[in-house]
Length: 213
Length: 209
Picture (cartoon, chains in turn orange, blue):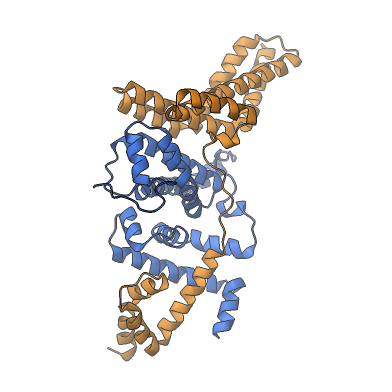
């Protein structure tokens, strides 16, 4: 065995120690042991210095200001709603705060979706099509829902699992459903623009088919 | 495990364990507090691992939903935060696996079917953030690591967890955590130095020389 190989093996034995020292999680006496080795080994000395530089670089990368996943924070609500919700919360006790928030959110979303549907109907009517708006709408929505379901298959897996798990506990079931709905809606919220565009396109196709007939 | 009194901050910030107990006793608002406390870190971890903000947000959301569903049966054998990190890391791994599978499939299907990109293919992870060459370099180096090494680097460097906490989260021996850290640092060093020392590293390097 050459001198070099012996030295490599020796260095390998100091790896854990080097990592401990690098991150300041050392057992008593560990630093002194490493220092002793480093005094005799330039390769390890160099490596430790390089690791410190790598750490500096890693830490120079700040986290972007991430938007929260959930959009149910009171802080994100319009002031009027916050006041109303606060009143409701006071009336119900804070334990129900979460549910109240979810239900409020649900209502808001529903109203917005209703508006979007109305806007789409208006757009269809504007094109002067001799199409039964109601049937177009339901047809469009079936497609819309299929798309949604495809893109959210993981969400629906959550539902099925939870339905099975919580079947015997109605209250827990209800809470979870609300949470899931809110998550779905938050997700929807993020994608609404995209989906509306897609739905509009789909309705365009339906319209064309109807016109050909 | 008996709940031990937390001498500090008890008035202002109840411990995770207390919040878990409160939730299990029926106080739903306790979950809100847990979410507020951990959401950013979970999302940050997912972001460091996946490199895409939107995916990190989805992972965080899914992780908390899973936690919400399973918390009633949570026994407190591990710390709540460790458990939460575990859930999030598993979700990240699923996504990375799917991403790789998708990338493989799409190569053929894109050519043959006249290119209909998957809805959530989006811009490549590190194209999204144009934050200067230095930062991109760091992220690319991180993204190039094997998943196992990237996980420990992220948990240690950015989440500042102890070796022991990381070992518990990943369910591996302490020595494995250190080995993965060492290997991760070796390949980060190699990659960053190959691209030429710049920025902070260059300054530090020049000072050393």
